[in-house]
Length: 204
Image 1 (cartoon, rainbow, N blue to C red):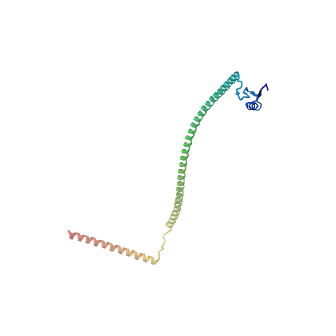
Image 2: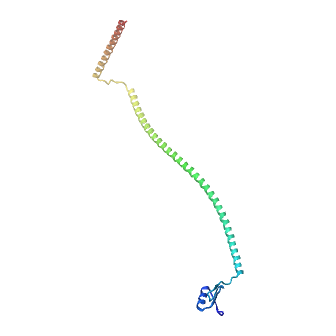
Image 3: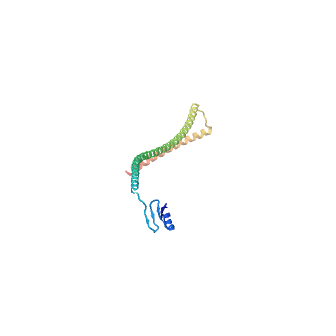
């Protein structure tokens, strides 16, 4: 404390001392509180203010330089990324085209495989029918050979009388009856020819 003036740390403390003790007070920063109620600002160091300004300007210049460098790097990175994206999009388009071509090829192969399967099944059915026909033909051929051998054996066998007396008598009667019917048929034909001739001459 110097005379009637006291030094305080801040304005609040200075104002309290001024009201309670009726003293003038000065803060460390130079602000003054008079016991009569007057309040004045403290000391302002212009030289210190200029140094702070220079430091602030340098600080912001450094920050601006750093930000500018960072901005350039980010811009370059963005350009690089855009190029990579463009390249990737081109590769994607190429891969999509290849995938589409592969799908079309797979569908075509699947269709061909289905057609081949159908043809194979039809061929199997035809082979089965041909095998059945061949088996039937072989059976018929065996039957024909058997019959031929039987006929050949029968031809080689001397003819013998196999009809009974009654059958021979019936055969003779039938032969005579056939001869009589042939004779009656010839006579009827001659009579019909004479009738036609008579009718023709009468009409003329």
